[in-house]
Image (cartoon, rainbow, N blue to C red; front, side, top):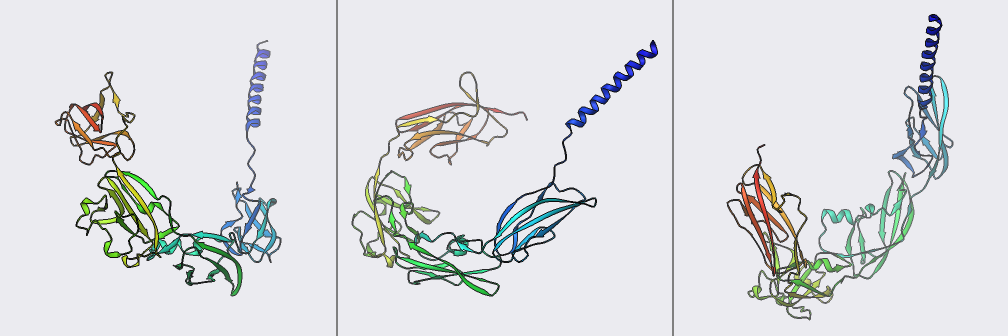
Length: 417
């Protein structure tokens, strides 16, 4: 009987092990088969630097061969690199050889296309002035992606129908603009394998310079860039800051805050940074001024022909209508006191506040109730309070803007780490 029981137990164990083995076999995933990344490709003429036949899940130890159905249309290298020979359609078949067994991986349909234009009409800003390296890149027609499927190694040239309106050099760079509002036809030619053909033609219209706004309001001490209101123009410009609404073409009457003896009394001043003027004007006195804008490369070119338009600028007091702290990201105790840990004296911490309107002209003052704990950093600006920590303790920060006041009590705790 004992031997019978042992035999039963052994059979049960065998069955359990066999069952577990079966479960393991059933849950094992089948090996992923090699597949082609693409089954349809469109390429240009020439050896393709980036587009080729790629195989996912290649089998280790296997070899792969590529075969073109029409080598007069497209050829393929041993590594799957494609070369477009002439326009047309063909198929690339990929075969795997593994342990002397050949298996078809898949087929990719290839279409070889000749270069063609993707647009027939463009508008571009009128431009004057010297060209920077960036301008040479921006105005190089080869960088406009005008030609779809350009042949690899081909050269493309661009010819303007009227160089007095738009001049293009031998490298395809637009170097000069004629009068705005005019249009030209540009012919694109391709030279490939010593043969030249016309790819197509497209029209370019030069926009007329204008202003997006003719009247603006700014706050006292607020600055702005007249260039931000230009439309249809890119390049060197001149502005005349005047108290007169009508443009004055007499260059001797250009009001420049650097040279004008009465500059401080002008409504608008030229905002200089580190001794340079970058194009900004600042509202320095209450009142109205007129900014006359010109597409001119020098003061001598200020004339009716280069006149873009006039911006009427009213400088007014923009009183604060609201003031509030931004959401606190430091911890606070039950009494709302902000807890700030620091490591060394002269460390910094910052607090931010919101105000309206954004161009509020009210001056802001920020104070610390205990300068032995923290002082206000002189580099603080409207919207941000930056503190220089002096030692442990508690101080109250007060922000005053117009008729509004904000306070924040801060406790500084030196870290032991």
